[in-house]
Length: 354
Image 1: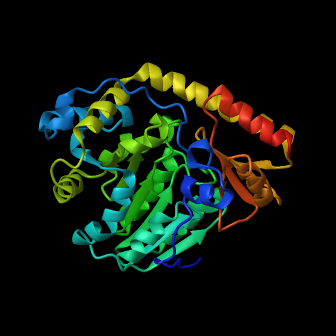
Image 2: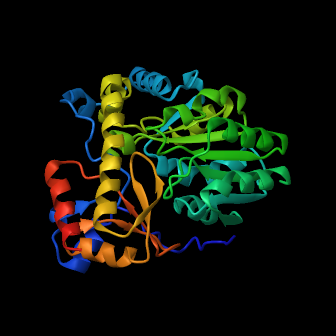
């Protein structure tokens, strides 16, 4: 258990500019495998000029919310808040939630996405990071909630980033019930849940009054630049946070793109199948070319273990391929998936020279 500094910069994936400066390779020549973003994006059709020229209509935002609720399994739009990215919600919640309850302490199940702890601390809250193995994460969260003082907040990322550890919905519901009994709060970050929708607790939200669920649009749909995230929570909280965010927070082009994508079930099914196959292909490649072993997984990234992770990452970087190392453990590395035949050939060639 430790308390990270809110002033410490976070080493995020996707840092192509920094890699370009370090290795002297222009940014446009890099193959970025350092994120968990689907490399084969949802195809963006032509967007009507009106969406660029006028403010988005309330009816259009309503349409987006209906499509999002159907996609996430949320029972009604009154439970859903749309925001310009999940990161915006992560930064807003630590300032907004205290308006609804006196908070006593923030507990982050880790190692995980560093912005959770950083944003809570920047808002002035006491925050503890509980670094546990994936198979011990539920037990640790349960112990905290079982003895929690009112106003305790537990944050769990499910599936976890970066190790891919995932708890089934009944386990999350059990933690949510403990939070309710303790007059506390459970925040569940489901940013990487799209490939395993059956594990989401979004359909249960009607019976989880002290739970907040974060969902990300950009990762699965491969459109991180669109900047759209959703919060699923109790209607009174959703209404208040929507009011706090204010009107026109979601641009018209984003609404148009996301409404189509949420509704395109054929593309979603095909994409889940492709990502599963690509993950297996990457596992086979890493096993054949390196001494790394798989330590964690989702169908958007792989998490590998090995004593030479840093050396391998440096070798790949010299070939213009960026993967993700972690400050919390130098024996771990995360790979996203190549998106094209050329990209697969690039990493295969680089690994052949390892």
